[in-house]
Amino acid sequence: MRQLMVRDAIKEAIKSEMRRDPRVFLLGEDIIDPWGGSWKTMEGCYTEFGPERVRETPISEEAIVGAAVGAALCGMRPVAEIMFSDFTTRAMDQIVNQAAKFRYMTGGQASVPLVIRTAHGAGRAAAAQHSQSPEAWFVHTPGLKVVAPATPYDAKGLLLASIRDQDPVIFLEHKMNFTTEGPVPEEDYVVPLGKADVKRQGKDLTIVAHSRQVLRALEAAEQVAKEDGIEAEVVDPRTLFPLDVRTIVDSVKKTNRVVLVTEEVQRGSFAEHVASKIMEKCFYDLDGPIIFVAAKNTPIPFAPVMENFVIPDVPDIVAGIRQAMKA
Image 1: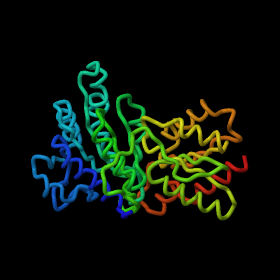
Image 2 (image 1 turned 120 degrees about the vertical axis):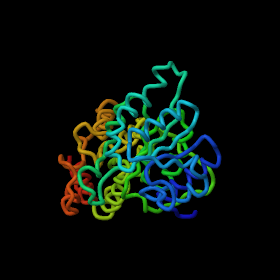
Image 3 (image 1 turned 180 degrees about the vertical axis):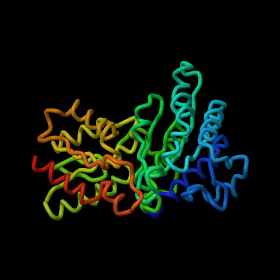
Image 4 (image 1 turned 90 degrees about the horizontal axis):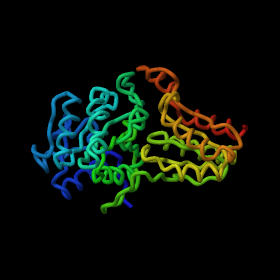
């Protein structure tokens, strides 16, 4: 199968869906050619589809999301880009109080088929205001679906599913994953929202990770298999909400040990939500405490050496695995 980078898988999903459905249009900052968005995920869209369907916007997250919500309520299927997930804070009223609540408040008479694509995570020395992982904010909000792909295959399939969904979707793309390569089918396919994926089979321990940390968890799992003979199973939720609790529970019941890996600060994180579900469903199956491998409790530093210190890496995950196995 052909290999694509994550950015090209996203671009292919956007273009194919715009060709399939005339209601799909794009809006955001610097998305027209030659820029094609900050991360080159919409390159060529303006040239192919023109200014009616690729809308360059002012630098105003409130305006971008507000216009997208209104268009979705009127029957369109907007795909809005917020350059950095940090700046969704500027549009939280539109996201949390408007988009997330319309279907409920209208008794299902209105829906908001909106996708908000945004880049999250650290790794580019972009400092504290451009490097956050705010997924827990969105998971906490009823009415939103939250997606965080790790691979090119999942990025294309999940984005197609998100654009076709009737509810607002926060689509989180890790800024360090855009050049990650992997197999992607040419044909149309969807990865269902709410279905986790076991990225690596194992019998000794379960690792649950999402987004970029899935790739690091896989690397760590291979290292401990070679050095310690530990076979770790890696579960990627892919959709943070709705969460596929069953796949996680089945894995934990098989391995009896858990390491949760996240780029978030642990306190109030999505990973803590996963831990609560494991404790609720698997308490008597655990042979030891749940081990967290999370970002340190600080804003993300600018200096690369300090940024690397704060964010979990492969050695941190390896240490977490070994700690869980000793418990």
